[in-house]
Image 1 (cartoon, rainbow, N blue to C red):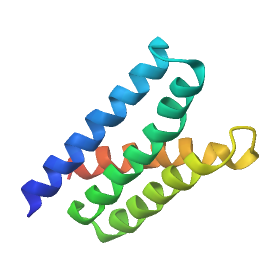
Image 2 (cartoon, rainbow, N blue to C red; image 1 turned 30 degrees about the vertical axis):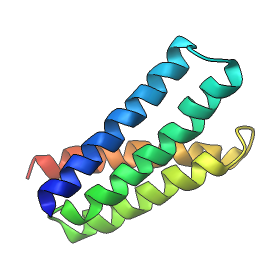
Image 3 (cartoon, one colour; image 1 turned 90 degrees about the vertical axis):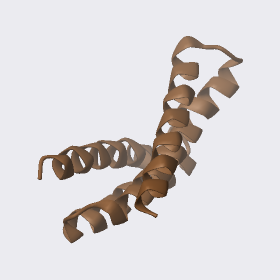
Image 4 (cartoon, helix red, strand yellow; image 1 turned 90 degrees about the horizontal axis):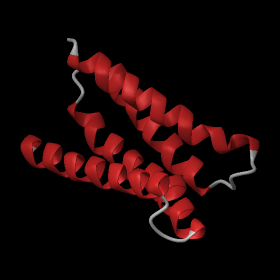
Length: 105
């Protein structure tokens, strides 16, 4: 089960990186690029964090990772001009920091 979760998380992470790269290189129309790099990317990363959360050894990190996942997904659905749209970036940074911190243990 743990190996399957890690595989799914890896696939989601790679798909998110592809979405981000498409946005950077402007492969499609501006609307599609924004959708992929500004919305789908954060939804996929949030899903990846959600799957990773139960795998974390520290339970406090687990709950924080769920919060980071929620922030990514919620922030992706907020309008870009909203002051709360930074929530998705905060969630992304928190999730990355939690992932790195968990690996050092």
